Length: 165
Image (cartoon, rainbow, N blue to C red):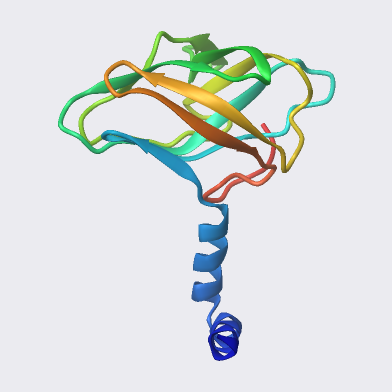
């Protein structure tokens, strides 16, 4: 066993690629529900003085041959969760609006990031979201059903990018 640890330590020192793979695996988490894969549910720390926050999925994928939709989410850390989309209007202003579901066509993959596209708005936070915290969230899909995931609060965005929203 000792030689295995020595081998792994030597491999990590010699190969930045191996180190990157191990680091990525350490932060990766998610769930699978039927044909739906939920990759790395995360939230950004809430801004001081705000009562809302946002959660994202590094990847939300439908691996099946039938369309599905994320229609609802709940969490004990907020009064409610709204499904939102963001888009730039004709005047060049970023607008956010609540939507009734997030469609997942067969074999579709969606990536969510702060400031871009879709997110889950956490309305009425019961306490601020702090870096490193974890909280449960229940997702409900139209066809696949319900699944519980763990959301990790992180300043650094999974898969690269900037910081807090």
